[in-house]
Image (cartoon, rainbow, N blue to C red; front, side, top):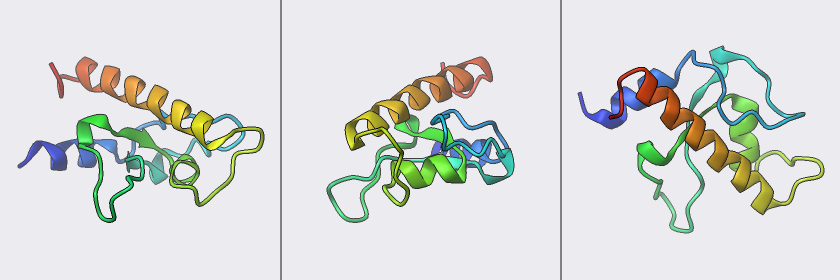
Length: 97
């Protein structure tokens, strides 16, 4: 199985790592591997640069939900913090070295 499928599968059921205050639903049943939207249609970042996120945080990152008091750049920074937490989790669990 390709690594991208392993990382995407691993995201399901895990705690949200994006954790946007006032947005995060805290429901691991809704978590998926979230990517930042790219400027190119149909292009996503590599899975290693993605974050485990709940459906509500995913909607905020993708711009389908506004985050009160946050600019789009601040939402991107919160996402990138989630990427770091996700990578730390993957290292701890042996998925990344």
